[in-house]
Image 1 (cartoon, rainbow, N blue to C red):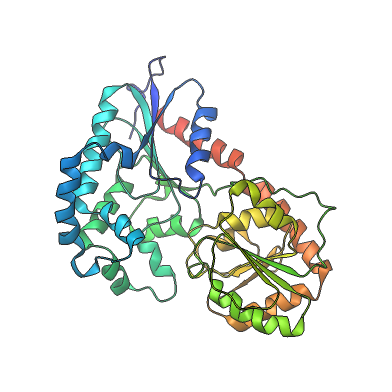
Image 2 (cartoon, one colour):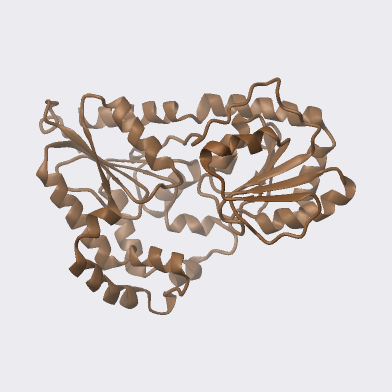
Length: 383
């Protein structure tokens, strides 16, 4: 698509930014990128729920489509049901219509959305997406098959999701595996998909001289205990503690019921307070079973911690196996035990991996780098 004539810059032009929730605090970072990289254009922020909420007729009608679309898939879990409510075919189309309405109200030079949960595009205005996932990317995770996808999502939603990407001028992804998935499963053209990575959402950049790798404190940071592989870590730690009785395990972000020796469950912690836990750790472990990106892995490497994680999603982009950490197959308990044991036995190896990981993240995964890359591609597309 070419927008040279339409997009001649003038003082009236604005940027429309569409988002849903915090996106693990990433939406704040993207908003700052848009304001910093394009200071000549005011940024109007549209929260999807707030866009829909005043329209009671739409919300009431959506109850019918919720039942119709999901049928036996309908969840009784409050959090999942809420997600399903906002992912019906009817509400998808209504959100698109509402987005097009606000885009007609002012002269926008381009629109931008995070995640591929809705389509905020409109003809004649270049549209860009920044996402860490696709529905069909779930097929790369253990235990997922097309039957699993069908059990979770209405087939019609997959068709609508495909339109999201096709309507975008560029799709920026956080990981290579999603970029490859969009080209392989969604027929997106290679020039349309750009992997730009992500950055840290909290300041955990530790000085090189302050880390004590002899403390044998293993750190886990994650909100979803099961999805992040917490039970696997707990099982591995039971065996590790027998060989290393002075080792400890600290769990941050969630509150699983644990009966483990030397285990501290901190529960939910504000992003600004996470650094103290990174400061007191010597190893970071996140054996995720599904992980579109993994911001906590970036933060651990910035804190100069060696990382033990899994080989799924974007994790191999972030953690260099054998250099900045060790990656095992998801569910490989004995592999977890071996990796943790090797690091607990060698503070020197921990330090070496921590230094390599810190340098790798500084060179490749910062919001400044992400912002410059996104902005350069947008400029080349619309000007």
